[in-house]
Image 1 (cartoon, rainbow, N blue to C red):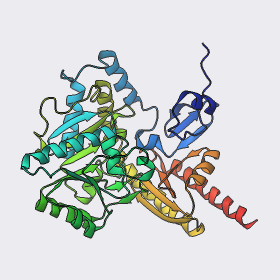
Image 2 (image 1 turned 180 degrees about the vertical axis):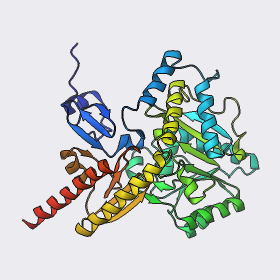
Image 3 (image 1 turned 90 degrees about the vertical axis):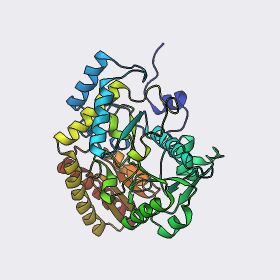
Image 4 (image 1 turned 30 degrees about the vertical axis):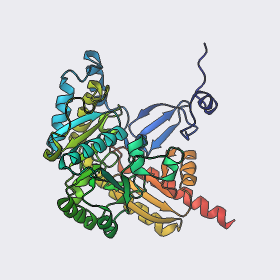
Length: 403
């Protein structure tokens, strides 16, 4: 049987139509560049939607994966495996928290955190203490519990009914926070920087009031650091920048170095919430993925990539401010390390399409936001290539309007 060619026509024939794929067949990557099957190089300012923190071809990562794969690719979580122990110890050291649960993806980490929150709340004798709240404009995933917390029409239409006992607090709206939480609240889920929501950061007054209300009503704060964590915003955990002091933390995306891996990290407050058999996973904490995760974290520290995220991120912000002074299409710029959102005056997919034609990969999110999530290894010169490309696109657009 002759394999089908890797084309958009074959994609339509083989797969459910849930991904709006680019007409681009990628064969490999080099540093911060992706290479297509015709040899064209593309500057990758998306990094697998924030997954490829080390870019492409990092030898330490490949060596860790290969070495573990020759020993043990999979074994049940009935057994103890050194890569799990080493990665768990590293995460607890970095976070100062108490316990770890490994899963496969961000949405699985969110589902586990929902279950943990309700299990924890159930010990206080209030059968109504099951409410799990999130913030408007958030994104926590596409499985039922995570989707219920996300609750945007484009994600939930046709999949109702959603998980009962979930609700939304208006983002950064302290009065709405005070109105929504109560003795029936089990947990409030937050993203310190909302990624899919267009790169918006939670305010310090909101966090401070949330912590006060946690003391009053005895609920958990769950930090979704799936996109903003692992060094992207200039610190390993984004929540430390606002002193959120979460009870549970969800990590994923770059955690496995490109392999499926996520983690829920819990404080002493929730350390004994799970009992044998109350939650589990077949593949979570896979030894190869954990070995990759440990290599990824070590590389972030060895190469000072958190500092690089801050330095190059600030450079991109400054240069984009210069572009905004030239081009009225740029409405606003928000930057937290190498997590950057550029609000424009039309649908951002227009600019993403134009950038693709110029061999630069950027992402459109929240309708009118150009999102940049490059590898943490990106240099100032590579960042400048992206900025120059966007400048060209905006200049060409203005010239076309004036014709």
